[in-house]
Amino acid sequence: MKKKIDRRVRATRDNLGDALIALMHEKPFETITVQHVLDRAKVSRSTFYAHYSDKNDLFLSDVEEFFEMFSTALIRHKDTSNRVAPVQEFFSHVADMRQFIASMTASEKVRDVMELGQGHFARAIDQRLATLPATRNLSPTRRSALAHASAGSLFSLLNWWIHHGGTTTPAQMDALYHQTLWSGITPSTSRPASTSTATPKLAPPVTRKLL
Image 1 (tube, rainbow, N blue to C red):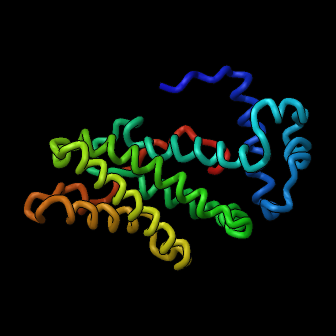
Image 2: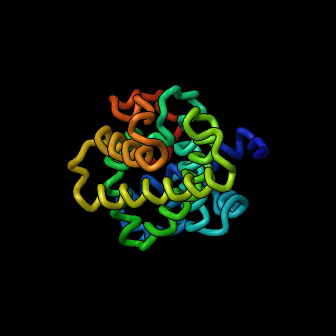
């Protein structure tokens, strides 16, 4: 269990993260300096280095927090569907982050971000599969392998979607992802009915910064 962060520390980290992400919507990551972040956040240099070693550390910490919150959204909101990941909501947010993604691509940080995201989603999908009727009796090893494969598939699908201009709607991508996933787990006669119906809406995850 993670140690709860002091409210003032959290506020400082949020402020720094917000400043960096705002700057990334304006200019390439490589051109942003720690001083730019300090000026935007109105935080002292000593305070910054009390929390982070450099701007890369700040960036990756922010991204990790984002994926931790998003990947566990179904679990935290006690979603009752047979979805294993909030694909529709995730893709919808990505669609609103085009400048941010362009900044990451220019700085060659996309791979780092994708690897972090895939790891978080793999763990969350594993937890989710352990609670769903169709998969909760799988052995831990098989469930873990399935979760990692599913997370890889999710990010491969996301990469395809981004490079094809996001012309397919997030809801359609959610349906495609889950239909493909369940077709590989259960026979069509026993496949969960909710995978072929409209994706239920979630309350938005309590996220910030990248959203």
